[in-house]
Image 1: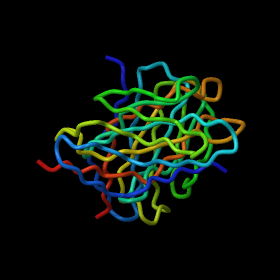
Image 2 (image 1 turned 60 degrees about the horizontal axis):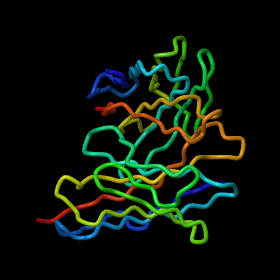
Image 3 (image 1 turned 120 degrees about the vertical axis):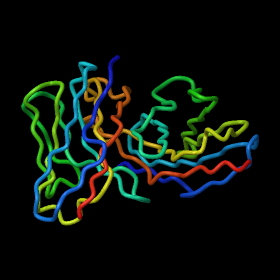
Amino acid sequence: AQSVTQLGSHVSVSEGALVLLRCNYSSSVPPYLFWYVQYPNQGLQLLLKYTTGATLVKGINGFEAEFKKSETSFHLTKPSAHMSDAAEYFCAVTRGTGNTGKLIFGQGTTLQVKP
Amino acid sequence: DGGITQSPKYLFRKEGQNVTLSCEQNLNHDAMYWYRQDPGQGLRLIYYSQIVNDFQKGDIAEGYSVSREKKESFPLTVTSAQKNPTAFYLCASSIDRAAHPHNEQFFGPGTRLTVL
């Protein structure tokens, strides 16, 4: 069975500092991986996704993530945090070899950005 | 503009009442999904539908029901059998992901349901 673990339910950084949000997955088949962002009382917005090909994926708002098969990780990074990055972030993986299209989400990581 | 709409944004329900949450999309997507979000628990799948007139239970379907009579609409009914319905409910849609698994899901703005 596939699963996603996000390490750290809360991460706090100073404005201008590096952002690192950790995501590890387990999958018996090559995964498709996604990072979503959620602002308070809103829906989820796609930041970036990994399907095949280049393992370093660039997304919106300056975020990027690297797929590391050997480490079963897909960590999200941003070189310099901005106050507007404060939100909840979810990592997700597709489910199942038969692939009904369902996603499995991690528990989420809340990013706090301090001035 | 294409997108997903959910209504109402806030909903209050008395115990014992059924309520229906609306979800509409004009993206021409085949698949639609309902998730429940509780603090610290991520998103949990309630029901999903890959095609009109067909839907399947997700991980926490008990106490919920859905219909898919039109491609653009996927309403969710929270019944009185759902013991703890207070939560944030999110609807999503995607191109048929069974055929295109790399395609992402697009989310609506959510409905916050509170049981009084």
